Length: 108
Length: 211
Image 1: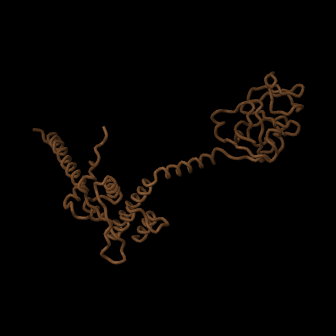
Image 2: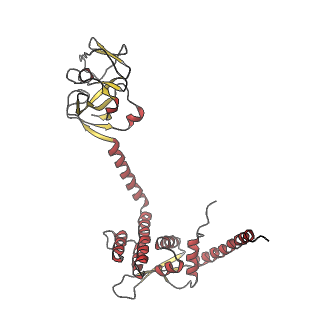
Image 3: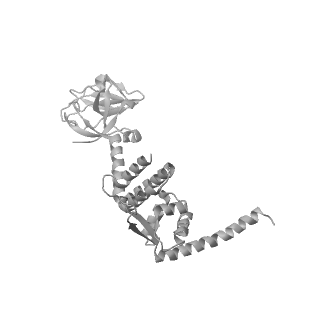
């Protein structure tokens, strides 16, 4: 069975961070720190989401003169909808698994 | 250390260009935000991954073709070579100063056959590589009658010889691990009739194309 797209733990962590304030433009480095993902993990996910128009990217001139403009990101309408579905799905999937594990650890 | 990491990343993103791809540039622009050497190195290392990924996905076919071409070149250089004939002992098949393609690999797998033209050093002058035709292999009996070569009592068909070319040789049996090779120009070739048997493992390659 093919894997459902955008359900990896890393992507879910990114969705979680972006969904805190879905309308705010976010910087890559801040997202990296907030999710704990290395740039080599984070940016490929950002690239994939942008390709599928789930994420929009823009350039924002730097506040310090002489510095290059910074890339910023926020979820599109589709992206917000998908993130909600995926995050909800992850919660549902986690709950029963935890239940069974607890049952094994703690025999009644 | 930070500066080195930044330069490496910048080179990976831009190369010699003024501006790299948007995603590489995005990672590069965020580099300033990192605090400390470890974080900077981590950021740059991830950036390298982003830069290669971006380049690769932009032109995947071109990259695969380039990789395939390089692989082919390496294989071709190690397995096939062009040889130059400075002698007349294989005339008229290979003329003096002709060039031909030598396959150094496949004969190890397929083995040699009667009539194959092989490259090997002369047994009595090991520094001199030469090309000769395989006339007999280990266990075969070779003798000559009326200017023709007989292998195990049967006359060998030699359509590549010019008419009137006669061969004279002594009767021999090829020992284990050896070959009996002759030059096509029987009047001048210093071949197994004079310099003796050729050790099988001294064969360097087989001529596959000449002209």
